[in-house]
Image (cartoon, rainbow, N blue to C red):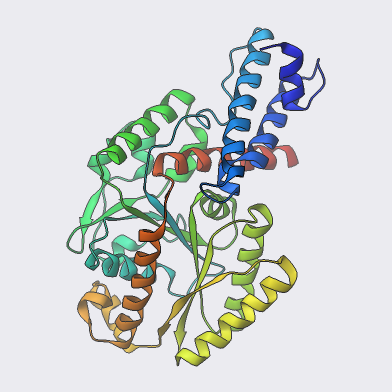
Length: 361
């Protein structure tokens, strides 16, 4: 490829520094990433061609400089053959029942014959294992550092649901070298090609830290949990706003927890959606609600999901209905993405976030 054409593709002047070249590359990847466009559309095809051209141009320029440096998001051009749904579950604040929802919706989806894996990525309060009465010896960080195989880390809970304890995994993604990162991605790809993953449900931490938003931006679908409490609603909207400003086409759905009735839940969602539509020009989706139910507290003490301990409870009925909607949506999706591409995007987002923080110091 002609060197001048390469600079034109990256939209930079000849003689730009390596740092400027890398930044131009990242900017173009963000703008033209296929996930920003509707699956199967003409724009998606155009974006994929643009990404390939940008990758080729970057490599040509850097090679001409006598420096061997892979693109900042090495592997963006690699064909993603995965068909795994990546659903991130998050909340603007703690105490709204996010983790309990993640566990119980996984159990309900398993009942619908879905192949479910939970990644416990709440770094501050990782407690899926606590709700199930487990004490994992290893976690995702051990896999990323090549100290354990992924199969050694995965636990089976609640009659067939797979659990990946993720504590320290996010931090490890930003600190390992390229060789370890590629080794990790290859292991993920191998298991995915064997059909080990159907839906990966990621229980993300509360709040709006870099780790939380990184997971949400990299995921294919996002579920925000909130409650009628005013502060929970404000924080939920703030989180939705943060995501949509960075990824306008994000697939965001809301579940209203701890409500007295269906009417109350619908009123609460309508108020959030009205604000989102007015100020962000984006409609979000209503996924359902969960009734206030003593069975939830009792099941926590039993360290058993309430969907299993109290299957006829009001909360379990609500979860059952939400799970049905999630499962039906999956059957209508043409392309689900893939867990390998998710981790590629995640590592890039976290790397960029770390560089931004370092630049402020």
